[in-house]
Picture (cartoon, helix red, strand yellow):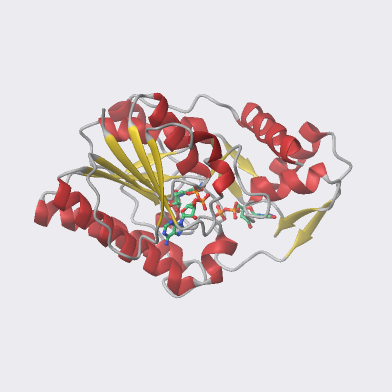
Length: 308
Ligand code: NAD
Ligand code: UDP
């Protein structure tokens, strides 16, 4: 039985990951400060004797005996990570240093949840791992983008300097049940608005694109990466690209909503296009997403209906 630490384990991806790792017969420690994650997401796991929760901020060092670390602790939604930008940088950078030091001390494998935001507002499409990105270092998204970029640097330097067994994955937009209704991300915003027949708020003209990956697929990719001999970086995401306007129309159709679409100001530095090239994940991890956007959205809509 492996002892696995999941930082950010109460969040969207972390809570699904904790559940999957427990089902695979591991002992799981969920570390979270509950900034954006919810206790509700892991409540059903608490009766499992192999599951533990630690309320802790990754900014502070911690000593634990573990075999593997999934480092997911960081707000992921633009409204949350921009609320306290300095805290976002501290969480990412100090959190990574603390977790890398722990991996070094315990000789454990460590996986970093990096992001497609590494590519910023990309000038190449789809995005390949070799692309170095187009990030505005002083813009409102920089606390997250540059924080995550610095974490990638730290991971590779700990690997080169101290031989830490690292794995870096770049996650593209991921959605699914357990998203927080007021999280501010597009999928949860649109579903909540559609279910209440409220206006659907598109930022800009809706021509910007994203490629949405269902959370179960993503979790499978994280575990495959941890079990592989790869260090990355490897893109994980669903290459099925959709414009934000088409996403709004699809959610209106799937919810049978009377909502109207309204257009609001586009936030600064909002990437115009995003789609992962997942050739590496397919070849090296034998991973590919299985859940198409319509199936994934229906599951997510049913989740929000059940919570209402
Ligand atoms: P989430 O906000 O649902 O979960 C993040 C979790 O981290 C929350 O439970 C939160 O309370 C916790 N956390 C935040 N700051 C912390 C701190 N200082 N100490 C301890 N815990 C802290 O986000 P998510 O969608 O589950 O994302 C998980 C990870 O994956 C993040 O690192 C995010 O950057 C990355 N990621 C997510 C996406 C996506 O689309 N969901 C895309 C790219 C990268
Ligand atoms: N978006 C939108 N309406 C919303 C929330 C988001 O039009 O209510 C847009 C946002 O401007 C961006 C896209 O949807 O172009 C994805 O936004 P999200 O915050 O989910 O993720 P990210 O921008 O980090 O990919």
